[in-house]
Length: 144
Image 1: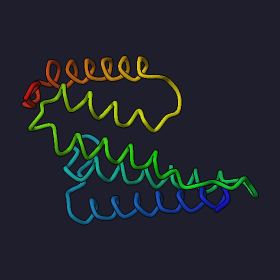
Image 2: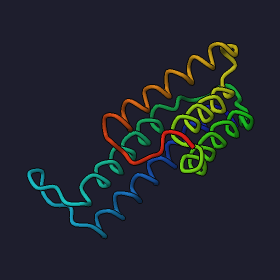
Image 3: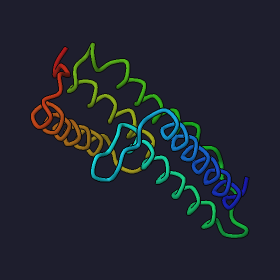
Image 4: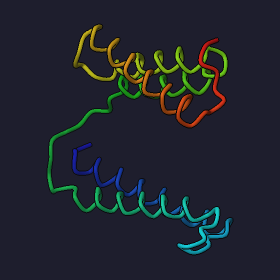
C-alpha cells in the first residue's frame, strides 16, 4: 500500500471512529451546556476532535508516495506494552508495571541502547508516580 493510500485509509478510519464516539455519546448521555457540562459533553468533544483530526489526515494525504510496510514488530511491542500495563498494574504495582511497559514499548524504536531505555523507563516511572500517586492520589498500589 502506498503512503498516500495508507494515510487516506487511516484518516477515514479515525474520522469514522470519532463520529461514532460523538454520535454514541450524544444519544446516550446528556450533553448539557458550556456552563453546566453533562456527562456526554467530554466524549462528544473528544469524538468530534478525533473526527476533525481524521479529516485533516485524509485531506493532507498527497498524491503518489512511497510504499510502506506494515510494522508488525513495532505494533507488537506497543500492543504488548499496553497489555502488560493493563493486566499487571494490580498484581505488580505502578512502579514495576510502568517500568516494564516503557521498556517493552521502547523496543519499537531502533534508536538508543540499553542505557537510553533504562533512563527513559526511570523518568517515565518517576513522572507517573508523581502525577498519579502523589498528585491525583489514585489508589493504585506502588509495589507488589
